[in-house]
Image (cartoon, rainbow over all chains, first blue to last red; front, top):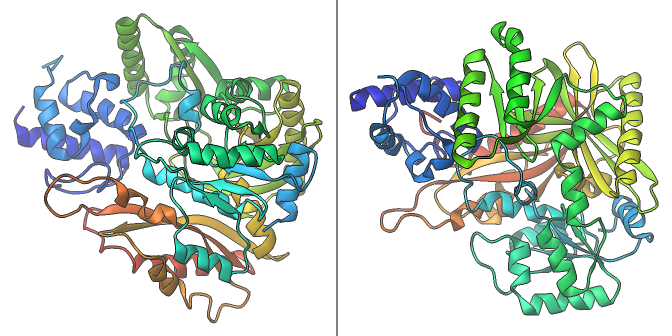
Length: 85
Length: 464
């Protein structure tokens, strides 16, 4: 999956979890500070990304630095092996 | 200020209305209690939550002039002057001499010999330690400085604060529970989710809550069977990795509701208990936003709450607990009362409002205790807040606005930002109590305060 596709998937998952259509978001958008994502919503975000990108992530293994911005999350998803692609 | 409310608390917890207290407002004690329990799969917890820790300042409006409040940061001088100008007489504030970022105030206190000595002297003079919720840290602090705890020890308090314990108590007492179940293993969770398959397929959500979750953390809403299956897969992978198939959660139907409620019972050392208040709780995604008081309830709903409060108190006392208990409840969309959604056997947000509502909310008026979000580029002086709020009550008879916590405005500014570059904007909260003659005028006052506080914030960006 191309990077811009991953970014679009993240935007879709964020819209689903936070119940807001943000439109296009730059990669330096901060998930916690700018979008007010909270630790509970991370679990929902991961589930939405599992659906859309075909990954499996164990929350306990996450490095919270990967969730700093849309860009760092995209980097993380590019590194994560796909299970059904 | 030594209010009737705080004197009543002292009488219940210590036997005398004038016993000096040393208060520690250790918000999110649940994080300590949760150790040893397995909750929902979750990312590693953030080490420091400066804004939540700064809420300890709310204790200044609960404690009386003979009491002591331990804070990791001193009261802002401007805020202290403001409170004095409002006619409030404040407690002595002690600050540990060794404070480190990321440590709780109790941990700071344990590492501060000068403070421990000051607390030891208060203990020798008969003061009692009243933490927000006793964990092993506060118990150790009490031991180290010879202060008797005004509430039970950590073992009792941890046990009775589990949501599983609360749900079982509700069922055993014959009170109407929210339909659902407790789970302690992966198999129990799988069985419960299977039972609810049809409900999920029909689009009626479930909520899964950690036994020791707090304020929206450790809470997952399952909207459909796909999400339920995903949760089970995550739990299975964790069990395979750790060899531990425990999961301590409650699963409940997500009910349509008219409102959330919060009521407080104080259970005395002698087992006598009294219902202190019932408030309407304002929440968003399980996160506390504020309280409206009084709550709008029918006489029958109020009677049911009084009955539930008595049952909860009797059973907690029989199980070794005394002290304050905050109970969350809901009124369904069909006006059915579910009198126990959650039992928090500790001080609650609403506990801290009891003294100031006694002083600032005349009979036959309504009040709103809430926080207003701010986004700042640099720490804000209290004088700016004072200027912004100056005049909001003008032309509004019987209206009053009192700032109840200022430390939370700048707490996140203390977080180190990345080396180099300009500091990043940070979020804060301004807590306030608003009083007005009726709900319409309270809503109008709320809008005026929100508009005034918004001026203090950076301009919102388009996505926020």
